Amino acid sequence: MLYEIAKPFVMGVVRVVWDPTIEGREHIPETGAVILASNHHSYADTVFLPGQVRRTVHFLGKSDIFTGASPWNRVAASIMRGLHVMPVDRTGGSAASSAIAGALAVLEAGEILGIYPEGTRSPDGRLYRGKTGVARVALATGAPIVPVAMLGVHEAHQGRKYLPRRRPRIRVVVGKQVDARSVALSLGAADEGTVLRAVTDHVMDRIQELSGQERTEEYAADVKRRLREASARREV
Image 1 (tube, rainbow, N blue to C red):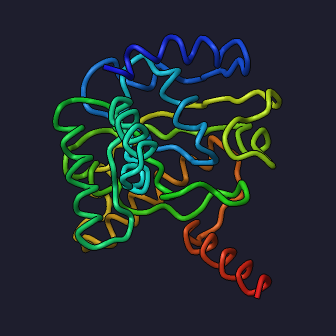
Image 2 (image 1 turned 135 degrees about the horizontal axis):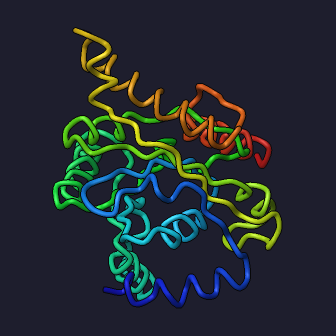
């Protein structure tokens, strides 16, 4: 309910201050389950993308936002749930299964699921290796994957954590649907791991075509961990 109430007011402010644009909105179906798979530069992505989509978009969010006993944590958790953000523990194992279950529930209800296949924000503006969760839920439900590129966000956010600058203008570019099951069928009798990786790479290829980003086959989380370790060593 909070999402539906807040969206017109928030986007009214966003349009006045940042004047974002969207191209290819016709590729997002008006009804039925669909996955929006986007590159990820900043926290603002989760406002600028769903704010310009007519339907409600459900996102998976890191569980850290929802934990803690302080009044701020409780308020933040309530707001995030009201905005249709579901908590996900990204430590792996059973946590990954919980994330998949949450995603499947959204799609089985015929809703839109927003996913950032890179798993976390890009530390330097490049497009990182995608995690296979997007392929797993698409293959399980048959929901089409719509690739999305957020443009201008990295540049507008440099040196800032939350609110981007007004320039360059932030653009959302939506591409044509990807049918994960068709990609899987083209691989014949390939094992599950091969299929999941192939579908994911196909989606990342489409995102790269839309965004024009430099591509790397590393995971963004690994690069961020390496940067944190290097920073800690410098402080010793």
